[in-house]
Length: 264
Ligand code: ADP
Image (cartoon, rainbow, N blue to C red):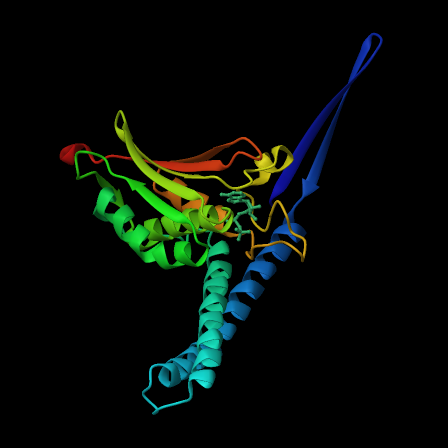
């Protein structure tokens, strides 16, 4: 039976009293499992029709079904972009379910991190342009930094951290990506000039479904899932993730991975 124990001590003059409370967590565990199954089923069910919608829109905007007027094409492009956004939200929901389970398995290979970061910056350049943010990249002088990692998952980590830095930046500000070697580790850090992380929110930044501003009027969209997933992926790689931020003065998010000794 899953249980939770709580011990409290009460000192009364010459006596000390102890109380032990045992919570039976069977019901809570069952409800959590049902919740996970529900999220998983709904996400899978949503994905199938969405893939079809995206495919159909792609056929029209790709010109395969013949010419359409510019007006219609523009409207369909917006619909296509939003179906992509919906797809990534559904993927995040599916990922979040894997956080506490053993499902998030990695397919490990040797990866040149310098190369991976470089490619991920190019892939996110369009997003930076949209927000009019200057994306800057500081190379390490020695080019190859080999780590053992899952390329798809590390790309997800980079994209999540890049897109946060970009979407919280003011226009024309810089986002600086740097790689640095610290003993047998490599640190990737992403620095922005956005609002930073409010002090009262700092301890919860990596919790799932949490956002500093969850009001309907907030400027940027999101689910509050990205950093929770990012942290899980980094820790599955035996890495470390953190941030430093003075509210009002931007934020630096970083993660560290072990460098593969044979290639150092
Ligand atoms: P979201 O989908 O809301 O971006 P995340 O898990 O990626 O979810 O981030 C959680 C919250 O942490 C965000 O809603 C935001 O309040 C805060 N946050 C994350 N990155 C930054 C950043 N670079 N600058 C300011 N706030 C940030």
